[in-house]
Length: 478
Image (tube, rainbow, N blue to C red; front, side):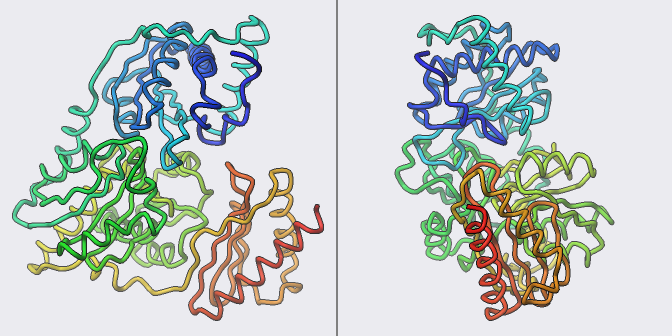
């Protein structure tokens, strides 16, 4: 390894960078050795490895496995698979750890590592401990990695048959209720799995971009961006399908459109899932993030559930879910975590099966071909923005949030009447007809903002107020 590695690859939730620049073989091999030392210190000596469809993934798998093996950790190659299949291996094979090699929804040149110890994904300070372990190995041994080219010492276990069998076995037979579903796998790892599973559940499936291709030639594999759903919407409305489902590159995030082509975002899916769960589990707890609609929290409580607003970030949400004993958790980004009848990790293919089950059950119970749009028709309409990303240097972003928080500590100085200020993650200011959020991104030099209101005029007023507060704070702190 010529020169130091880029420490910025160690992010809040994973290790990630540009594959051919930041994740060269010597760096990845040294990462494997460091993770091996980290695991051995915990008395663990085995790890499963899964990898996504990106062109760099097989290379990264080999380098990582060499490093882990050199560090005394037995590795099991699961093959190309969705991230939830790697999570499933932690239960099915019971290794000491697991690593998913994936760039998730990022552009094709990116790749990275989601690191699991036991059955939990590590994040935050634990990721930084791994960075320090890697630095210590380099400093004490002078070994910067050789980037060997030989095959790694690893066994193999094809996880997909076990994973698909698990999914198929978790759902009752609704074959008497026909359903036509369009699946857009975005040339990611859902392609070899999701169509097979939904057909086994009796659905008529129309496939889009099921062939894994790490160049992502058709569209970017991120279902939270509306333009990436264009082909799915056209197929649903053009083929008369009952719904459409899209997956990100590693199939841990879901996007859903109804029969009209309208998008159901993560918080709207949470409403439908929570209502369904509360029929059987009265008083169940649900966890979601500060970016989600107030209508979601209100709906959960109106149906007798306990709604917890928590910090953004799939690892943080998952930890809060475990701590609170929640039945379900979810984010706007399409990470949906089912502990109800499942393992509690984010699995978009399992979530797709739950959407299908929910609609089929509603049709069976009503005796009519009820539409997905009808199930969400009573969710109050609001006016909202998508996530707005406001460039702000890392050295300033948390200070800016603190400055805005201080403004709301004196609500009499704010030009709009403030009903509540929620500071669990940034500042979520609740006004008479809506709310606005400002928080610092954990992964990028940006401030993330989102706004929601009962009418367009209120949305504009709240957004204008809070954006101006951010601008003034940046200017005063610069």
